[in-house]
Structure formats: structure tokens, C-alpha cells
Image (cartoon, rainbow, N blue to C red; front, side, top):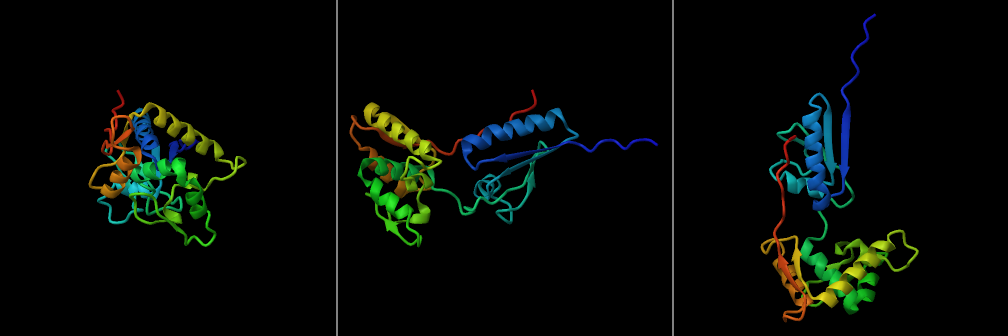
Length: 207
């Protein structure tokens, strides 16, 4: 009896909804699809990122297939409305490491999730609008290393006073961008924040 051919392989990419993870993973998925056209390649990222990649879809959780044949199927990570944009996150972290850490941690860890915090130059922020790292208060926390890395980063920024390119654009979050610039200070001796725009790159070919 003749054996039936084996099913086509199916490759699944599950990618964090962060641009620096999405872009290279998309290029890899496209190259894989080009090198194995009989295969199925599925790319899954968070709904919040998927809706930005495919804004014309009738539903934020709708599926799509790009020109290379890669299928895009989103998954929910519990934050379907999105994460804090670049300038707001930068401003929050800056203030966390410059005198507002206790207030931010208290707000982020409010058990009723009803607390708010006000930072200089920013509107009131609810606990569910804060980056998750500001809720870390113990070195025993499994993600404490992330907080330590952010602290080292801002210490370097304080020392070097560089120009900071923020992954956003003026029309997306003008108030947060102004707050980020104000947080860093405006003199030549302080770090300065600039909107760099959302950086995208076309999916590369198989060559």
C-alpha cells in the first residue's frame, strides 16, 4: 500500500509585541517561507501590536496573510488596548529614578487598581497605565534584573547627557513627548529627547 505523503511542516512564530522583536522575526519568517514554499508559516504577536501592523482589518484580532505567504494570527496577552507608548514610558521611568519611585511603586501595586499618580508635566496616570517594571519593589522579584538594568541605563544617561531618540512621533503622544523632554532638561548639559518616528523595515527577500 502506497504511503501518503507526510503533512507539510508548520512553523509557528510567537513574538513579543515589541518592535525590536517583531521586525527581525518577520524577516526570518519571510525567509523561511521563501526557502520552504510548501510549508505553513504562522506569525503570532499580541493583539495590540497586530492591530498596528494591519490597521485596515475590520477587527483588531482579525487574521491576515502577507505577500510572502506568512499567515498572521494574533494572540491576547491581556493588554489588547496596547502598552505605554515610547515617550510616556521614558518619562515615567525617568521620574521613577528621579524622586518619584516610591509614589509610582505604591500606585502600581494598589490592590484595588484604582490609584492614580501625577508626575511633573504629565496627566494623572492610573495604576493600569504604568509600565510593569515600576511595580517591582523586592530584589527577590523574578524580574528584578529588568529594574536593575533600567536603573543602570538612567544612571548612564545622567552621567553622559546624551540625545535620546524616542520611538514615537509628535502627533501620537505630544503631551508625553513634551514631558519626556522636560524630564531630561533643556540645557546643553542635560540629556535631550527627540521623537525618531516609528521605525519600520520592509520584509527582506529570500536572497
